[in-house]
Length: 475
Ligand SMILES: [Zn+2]
Image 1 (cartoon, rainbow, N blue to C red):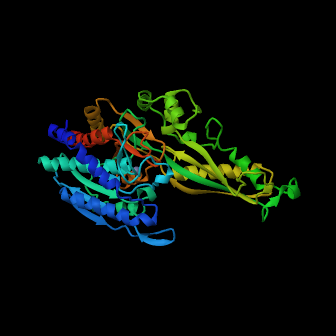
Image 2 (cartoon, protein in one colour):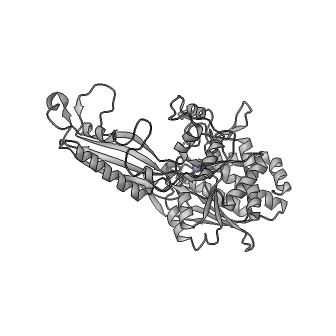
Image 3 (spheres, rainbow, N blue to C red):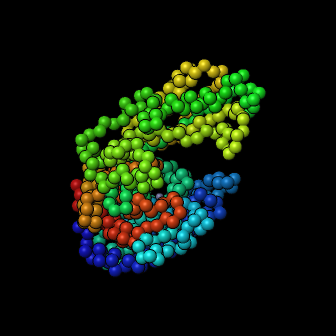
């Protein structure tokens, strides 16, 4: 249980916490556009100033330079903070990011994206870019610290904090910092907590213990030196597009089954314990229909659908570069085409293994095609999958905190996409990482009308604080 004074403080300061969120939403810290870079630096400075006022030791660590749209500019700094170093307490590392996705009113936002706007219909939704991703959650941590400072309460654990300003743009410079500081700033960290993902739905809090990785491939097929006209060269030459379509049709079935041999066999076996976690998740196949706007789910079974998204690999065909794709009836024979596809990875499918399996298979299938075209296949970029032990004391602490604050047990979820820094912390610091989301599945993190529900912000602040108390007691 958290200190009851802390919980009342959060309720009493709801409006002040919302005002503070409005203050940071008003700083358009878009990391992907050089025109906004000063705002990202301003937001880093805001974080440092407020953490110092709350009694933390803070350092703004420069991460070097980057080239963006042809300009060389400074990367936003990592904000490194420490609060407490009592050897009798556990040390928790918090991670969050203070940069945001771009947003323009004319993209279809109901309100100015840089003005935190409460829903006029009183639903409690607070609209604004970064409200949920990730400024609400990082302020949640600051709110917890503020409550303890003002009430004169002892923090239950030591905190180390790492807030970056480049998460939405590939976390440039961060891996190097973590590697460099693993025996410096990050020394003594017992476990890591990241609040930067979402509930699966809009009603049930969750703890996230896995993320799929990715391997992104390109198959290039070429033949003639230039594009040709089918009236002149049809039935005269081998056509690269025909060869590429044949190859791409050998990758996956319409039911989503991956045809590359050897991949299925690498998937970590499903235990009874894990299987049960999917059965109890508050979810229905209709949620998929609603999310995609059509009834096109691969399965009618809830657990099968969830496992497809969370614990099995998937192969998706993304596009063909070089193909004729404009409207109309151009009779071109493209000279060279590049098919793009990716595979979402799960334990224990490693990036290196999957790359070899795909390359060997595509080469073998190409050899069966009677063509004089040339073909090459390459992996363009990739990230390994991650899964944590959901029975670790940090997860048990978050489970108890969720029950205390929300009155329900959390769902245990794995995300279909990736949050690369999770893997960096897990691998370099050899630490358990807990993903403890604040926002709901419909927050619209990277789209228009991003919002955070007031109740998620306020209860989320209580949840983060209560988790610290449970973590202090956990063994
Ligand atoms: Zn985020």
